[in-house]
Image (cartoon, rainbow, N blue to C red):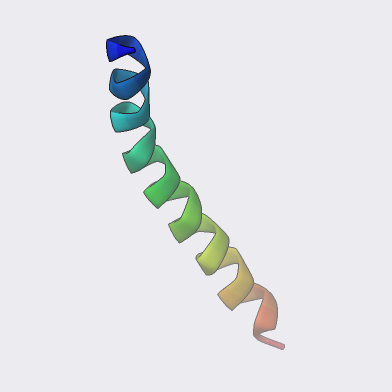
Length: 32
C-alpha cells in the first residue's frame, strides 16, 4: 500500500508536465 502511494506522489508532477505539454500543443495547433 505504501509503495502505491509513493508511486502516485511521484506520478503527480509527471501528470502536470504532461497536461502542460498537451495544452501547449493544442494552443500551437489552433494558430493558423
